[in-house]
Length: 132
Ligand SMILES: [Zn+2]
Image (tube, rainbow, N blue to C red; front, side, top):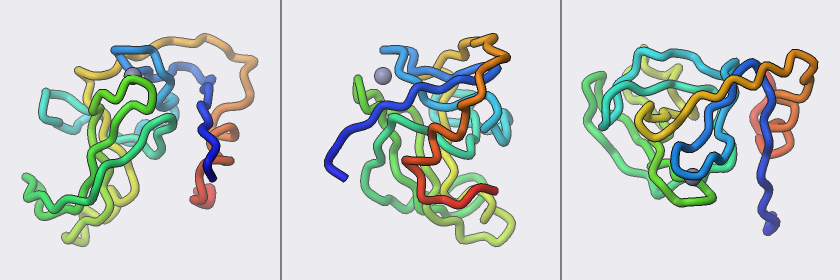
């Protein structure tokens, strides 16, 4: 797939890149707001769009060893957080293929579009993951 897509999200709220306003994730995809990144509070989200991943890196974290990749904004290339490729501890497995977005790097924008149907559907064409 050589073509570059940018996905526009609609939901009750949308998380956007603080630098450039690029859409990253919908409020509905947040799994937890209790995570900590390198710059403080961070979100664990089920899916992020308009980002790209760096190369896999093994990191020792508070919750054990993980293989992660840095996640950057496709538009302005700011590092926004990381993606979990692999968790070695069984109870951390739920994080695999999920994204951490650092609060410091993003802004939450209320969309208030209750009529907006296309939320994660728009994402689906980019993602090979089967719907949960
Ligand atoms: Zn950006």
